[in-house]
Image (cartoon, rainbow, N blue to C red; front, side, top):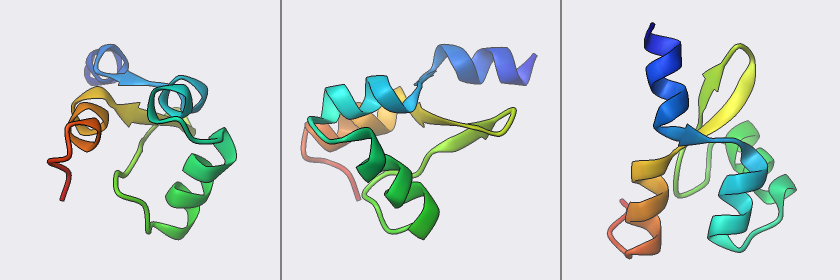
Length: 63
């Protein structure tokens, strides 16, 4: 049940990259090196990017 809830609150790498105006590979690099402005969650081994963190980054309030 937690996985389903996480899916509703996150997008895949391609969608996140489009929203952030970055290449998908850039987001994958952030995930691998753990040095990006947002961190993904993993759902069944796949990266998912939290919508609230994407919105915060776009609004300039990301940590």
